[in-house]
Amino acid sequence: MPLALLALAVAAFGIGTTEFVMMGLLPQVADDLGTSVPTAGHLVSAYAIGVVVGAPLLTALGSRVPRKRMLLLLMALFTVGNLASALAPGFGWLVAGRVLAGLPHGAFFGLGAVVAARLVREDRQARAVATMFLGLTVANILGVPAATLLGQHLGWRATFLVVSAVGLLAMAALARLVPYVPVDERQGLGRELRALGRPQVLLGLLTAVFGFAGVFAVYSYLASMTTEVMGFGDSTVTVVLALFGLGMTGGALAAGPLTDRALRPTLYGSLTALVLALVAFRFTVHVPWLALVTVVVLGAVGFMTTTPLQMLVMNKAKDAPTLASASNHSAFNLANAGGAWAGGAAVAAGWGWTSPTLVGAGLTVLGLAVAIVAGLL
Image (cartoon, rainbow, N blue to C red; front, side):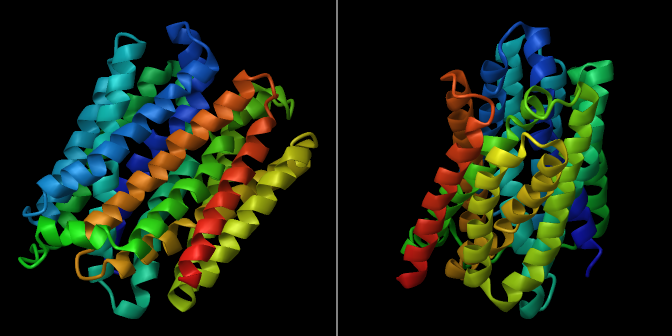
């Protein structure tokens, strides 16, 4: 694999850390800023809103910018957003910082996936994309637990200062390792928009919205479920998050070759397994060792959906894939926001900390149904 994929993975590590760490810091942020955990959960949604808005907007604005330069500009914006979060004087400012940090997320991953695919042979493109996504999974094994632990001991602001430093490191790696990739003059914004409007692309995006929302309905409140239901202390939250990340890494490693071999069967299988794992978690969460095993499985089957969904929209918009690829991350973060909101609504309604598992299962069933319809069509 080209070394440029390592640079993309380093950037993905930073993005993944700042995206997912808020779930582990919700209790600390809520206590420090004088709000409730479900209200602090809006910070998860704020980041997701930034992704949803930024993915198509920044991709369109950068459609004529050379790919390497655009990747660097996006990481610079990411770094500024995290620094703003670290220095936020109140809850409203923190929401704004989270939105700003989320703006380049979708555009970076969308463009990064296209660049990664162009660096390898056609029969290894899913593996290349999965390699970039490994940065996200490693973030959940190392970055998120370490950042959560840092936030618990030095305050949540220290976490975002460290993520800002990771952003600077990623910029250096991109500048050094990613080759010059020119803009295809044939791929103007109009052509990108037409490709985005194809029915199979839209169905792929809709699958991501519902299918992946099931993951975030549970993951957004995993820290609280660890202490309130499993019966572990605050110090164990980092271990549980690391186990989820370990599962994500296994899922990402498996998803690349499986997607290269059989894209739609991999998508159907991972979504079905996710539904089953979410339902099982409703019961295993009360048995500590079973709960930990299920967390690993949830991470694995949840993240196995990302590579086939990414490759699906890129393949269906093959002649102009950048906007469709970026929009897929808008879809993932609509899933993030929607899942966090739905899970939080269930908890706020008094249904208990385990209720997000069944809410998530229902959302994933909808995603699987859309995927099956798309396959039949």
